Amino acid sequence: MNSATMYGAIAEKLLRGETIILDGAIGTEILRRNVSWADHQLADRPEVVRSIHEDYIRAGADVLSTNSFQLCRRAFDNHFRDVAHRRHIGAVDLDERANRMLAASVRLTLEARQRTVAPRPVAVAAAVTTLEWCFRPDLAPSAEQARAEYREIFQVVKDAGADLILLETVNSIPEARAALEVANDIGMPCWISFVPDERGRLFTGETFPQAVAELEPRGVDAILLNCAPPDDITAGMVELASHAHVPIGAYAHIGRFDPPEWLFTAEYPPPRYREVAAHWKQIGKRNGGRILGGCCGTTPEHITALATLR
Image (cartoon, rainbow, N blue to C red; front, top):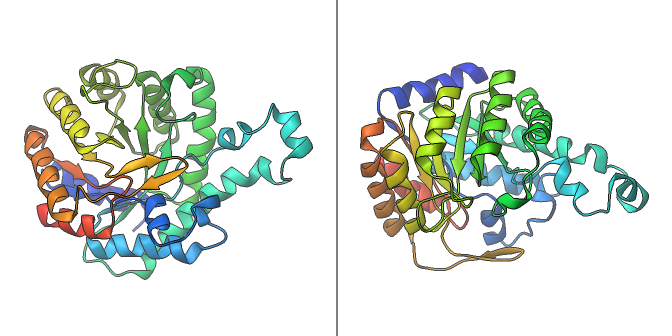
């Protein structure tokens, strides 16, 4: 199947009201396997990344997300005073490294899909997050600058063969809108996933009814919530489900952030996580298709548990 056909199979399932299973964490799963997440391991340990994707296919995922969290030119530039300083003291390949790694993240995911037999269509979602740190909406660039940078990122992953864009851990409506406009311009399906706070709102104070009003008329394919504790996701799902008309979904993190890595905790083993996800599915029943997966700290075992909710 080509990209349009592969995503079309997922979209048809959502239209029929079926539940789609997204994969779980990539970065924290690399850490859990006692490998450093430095450089995303796309170049040094590609077999580790590929094997994680393969494990998620075997666990029952319908959609695989690429190992590309915060892979963009800006993420490298932010380590330096300015571009001249980067070119003066930085590695010589930083001008093209982000795009090369983005393409590699898609390629490894496609290779995993090709190598692993699944009795269902499996789509590859290019995972892209906010241009600045995902928990800091105050750092966001202007809409014009965001569109320019997302255009570069989205074109790279489209050319590499991704089936859709998964813009995740989004913290403001304006940046979501700018990215969606670019996805529309280049002809890529786009799911947008926001990070909710404990009140079920965006970090800016914006509400999910406002997000729905902005994004649905602009053709967003699905609206999700991610990278927050399960209780915060539940609060956000209540707000989102009562207003959305497109498919919705959720994938929480479990554990705690211990910069620069992740602290694994035992509060949500797979059976308990499945119970919470079943509640999210019930909340979203009026929206037809639901999308369920896992964020930081979740494992293939968590996705195996979620796959029983189809």
